[in-house]
Image 1 (cartoon, rainbow, N blue to C red):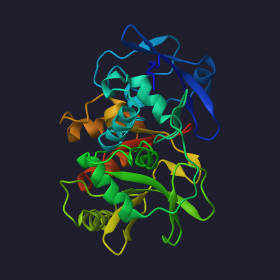
Image 2: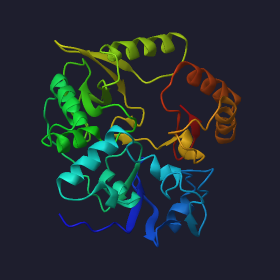
Image 3: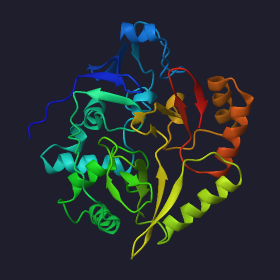
Image 4: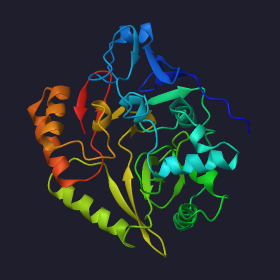
Length: 316
């Protein structure tokens, strides 16, 4: 396919009602952002530290996220999801080096984590009501990581749902009794919930799913507030899953990572406990939330996030 760079994107917030947030533009290799006047009037802060709610053109002062502000970079997949997208576009004749940050956001479209969405939307969301076989998907993930096949790229890209993190994973709908797993991004089926299910990478122990599940149980026993977790068993293996913290039924929840809040590079060791707790205090103005963040961070190595709703802000 012919490559045409994306130079203008409209950003929406889909937490409850759908609101136009503003526009992203690429001009002379710089990414510009401007809030929509009606969104400013709403008083909703999507990124209060680095992107305060006011009129005017914003440009990120650094290139930590390729010129994007952290709140928009949080919509982009990292590691596994980025690899899927790169290999998929290359299959269609587009070199991964050609993609700019706005191109990548357009491929996320309405399927990213959290509640932000982007138009034009190139995500090609699939609404297929298809039962998913975890062992087959795990094997296809291994094949893809080894670069042995092009046949599975697009299917895994759709199932990945632009989730963050480096390990292979899918977003899926899971029935209440955990017996049925179907395609994830579409409208939630009755009796189902949105989940993320992880597969082992080439560096992981064979029983990584059971190990991560055991850690989640220990964290919950210690009083840490976590989403529901489950160990999905097949005849061959067990896979760790967690209920999506950015979904309440079909309602999307705005999320913002700690690294995105303060434009800190999450690929390098740039944060310590003191900085984490200071940010939580500034964001929430609540000492109880600071104590919760300390307990959460001390017991888990997952990415620290904050959820922000139109009315409240708190660490999760």
